[in-house]
Image (cartoon, rainbow, N blue to C red):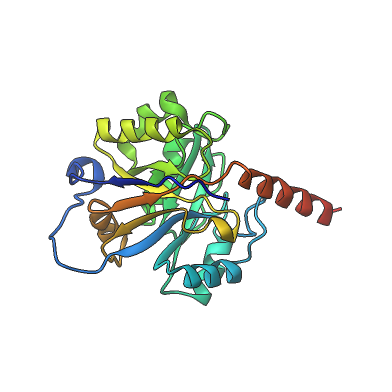
Length: 248
């Protein structure tokens, strides 16, 4: 269910401290972690993977840290964190009035459909990190697109410049170009809705233990990523159908 060609992308320059909270830091010789920054569990409406299954799959695949970013929910991430506190970062993919943002290191739920600036402020109020997921994906209604992204780009820490579920590589390329033009940190995500997708798009980065050290490490990160087959979208459609039938 994957394409063979792999992209390697580097955050080759430290980010602008004024725009990214002073990310930077020393260059110690340490073993990088493999980090998965965009995943879903059964707490998302289009996924059937339980938190337990996701944790077990990450262990099998050698993923050192995983951000669980369910749609408009953190309960799945909190459940997984109780199982594996050393592994799980609590995140959320949040629908706003301008499209989706993705947040990390949350302790409180951020409700959907808020004005985007308010949603960002709520993430910041709890010390979280703010990114934008699949910003230029032409087929996703939730994607911001450049027109809505650029007015708020200085409010976010990073852009997802490789989403493994993007059908057109050019959409990822456009996100990367914007990040490089505007001096934003770059990251990738498998956007995994099935366990087979875990590890498709990961970030290899130095260890971190806080939101700020995460940004410091992301500035030195290397993305290793492959596009998933478009067929993975049928898994999401199937999950939605199963849940609708179960609710009858």
